[in-house]
Length: 228
Image (cartoon, rainbow, N blue to C red; front, side, top):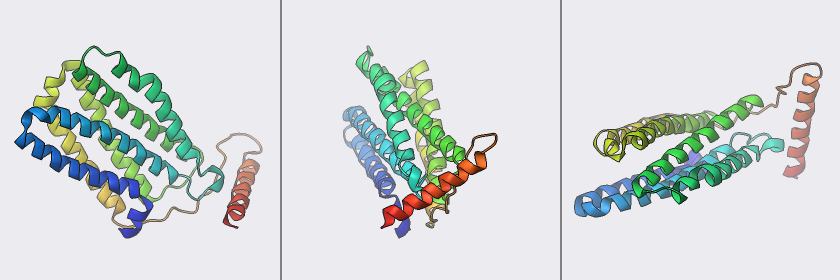
């Protein structure tokens, strides 16, 4: 567990933030119910930023053993997040006519953006045949389950109004997060170092094996150079 915490400090900070935030939200709900909506949305919007930070941390581990591509996962995460933030997430806040709908639509689009990031990371890892450790696979799977449910919840709330979330769908958020925590607990119960990666060219046709060997050789040489 200690090794996992050292490898994923942002993730464990996120879990602590969610736990403390949930306790605070329940306290606010029981002591000052009129202030609860504003407090909740503030907590939720901050959690969106923290989740993007966790995605960046996860992406750093996708090509951890491949020096030549070590920063590729982070670059993909940051670029996709920035593009979606500018052209997809922020417009709904700037040009919306109502605060409740704007917040729900922003939460929906933020969840969709994180799903897109995870899908692209999965695809890139498969494309370059990068072997993911059990810890990283578990983190990505847990986030996928949680974000998938979040997309359904917020899409329904945007389509049918916020009341359906307050009366019916609210229970799905803690339920999905509980499922997510179960997956994370199983995946992070023990620390599993990343397997020794090997880059295999996905290209088809003559010479693909030669390209794969050249990439692998380049990765080894660059690793030795950086270790000096």
